[in-house]
Length: 257
Picture (tube, rainbow, N blue to C red):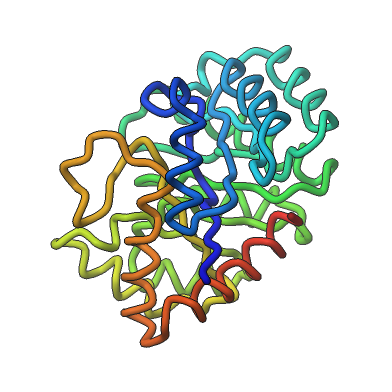
């Protein structure tokens, strides 16, 4: 019997939130039995905490997405700090740098990222990193500002083999999405082979990026995590039950759940 954990799901987003009971029911039926619901701004941080309070085995992660870095206000951070103590908050994020879209100024993204690392050090919470087209800058900030005891995971990973090795060498973690099932994602599959299972997690990043063979399903959901897990088991040459057990152990250790 498998028991997968979706480590990065936007369960408060449209397409999922309005039918959350059905979404979680389908998830459990597929063997995905625990969820980390991710906050991306002040509004969704409130929502993920409320959701976690309502559902067993559903946990909250509080963040401000780099897209929103130019919009955030000091009171948003103060409220986030207050929410940390409200129960079932297991991590901070997503936070980091996104230089692909640059919806927020790069300097604003960097300053917010540093602030989150400071809060992580004080709260002893792990950090979920969003890094897109900004690997060197992300690593530089982590080197200079992250507490050495802070656990770090790169979510929705799509880096190079060299970047993968650098992340693992620093003791950080990597989380893979359904991207690894895409036909043109050979590099991502090679990265899967490179990451040891005690440094690996998996996620849907729903409602985005439905995996093969469900690419035509517009709204991704936790139940579809099984397809990512099956692909990783295939790439690692192990059965799905063994993979599930090892990923569950890694995820529980990382988030303290």
